[in-house]
Image 1 (cartoon, one colour):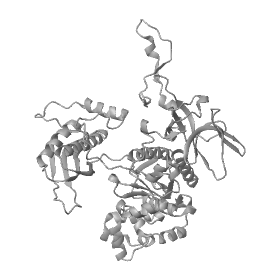
Image 2: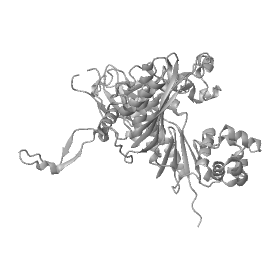
Image 3: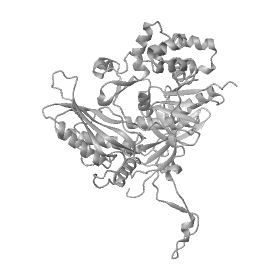
Image 4: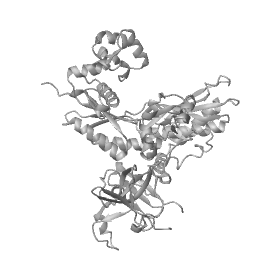
Length: 423
Length: 141
């Protein structure tokens, strides 16, 4: 018996951050809108009007100042609190449409819709429901593998005729091949700029050329990941949906500062904040870390300033997830490497050697065991009254290192004091 | 107190009893304790489609919606005649009663000082969502 064809869908939110801003600002519809990365650096989301102006993804704001002014482009700082809440709503709605979901990123989700009747209609209904309930437009791509689903989504976005849904499984071989011949390889999931160049060198430019190429020689040249990609493009599902994200083996929390800092107190303050965030993530996945790394950096783009980028690794005597314990070590590490006279632009912490909290061995030389109830209370209070309500005294009180977010919109959906108004 | 106290999901200290409460003896009521009333579930008919809005102005005082009140707006409900809706006119959010009879569509204020809104030529109206509850604070107002 032939196994039934898999139907894997990829749902991708259109211009997600811009779309989130538009939900509560209807005056932004049909206006050119961009959202900037952390510290208001680069363009990370663009409305279609902005794409039409030729403004590229990732370009720094200072390079497009003239265009922004000339076309009255509306500029926003990232409002991740809003985007995360809107993302959670979208993902929760999508979950109702299939037995299996993998949330792939803040604005993308895979669904396994194999065996579901009227997939086209269901996909259309799903789109309409997400739009109605959240105001976020999405496109749906469907294929018999994740790679094909991704590619189908690309086609759905490009072709208005598809009405936001494109399904490779509905095409004849001939029709599918014609689509593959018209899409360049760089649009394939997992094929980056380097691979595109390398493939071009051996005469492979279109998806059709890639999927009909000889697998053995491609594997020899590019490795097993490429083999999987080609098999997936041929319709063979090689990459399964991952329902739960596996516990992270490394947790990094770092950020560039809005402006450079010179005082050790500012760095202490920032590191304490990063440690709190990282430790919170650690506790959320019920893990402990055995290694803490702390680093501070000067601005590597400033040739005119002297550079200093030290890092200290602190092996922890007992694996821990306690904010207080980790902060103590981070402060000592900073004291050991800090040198005055530099302008520091970035700092961060990395937690690694991560193990489940139930697994670690006691240490006969360790002091009194930590009180997990304290950290539990900390997390519960912050979950209830908002992030940052209760924190250790060191954490983020100086603020001189904080992100630049000059054009951030209100936290419309999560903050009692920033709700939208109506008359 | 200028701001209402946030209503927080999952932590509602109200207990619904299935039987009469007796005093004095080892509480017989304990056996009847039901699950707590979940205001979150009660107020958010469709959680993923519910949003909160703050009211400004007096246009709806006739039905007890006052300046500073908080409305729960549900986008999953199909707007119908006579419902209280959150509409968008000239890119501004407005809360009004929806009057819809055939081609005749109006937004009606619940305050005689405000005239009903009918669409002028070129004016667009979007119904953003349907208002399901008004959270009106009575203590220390």
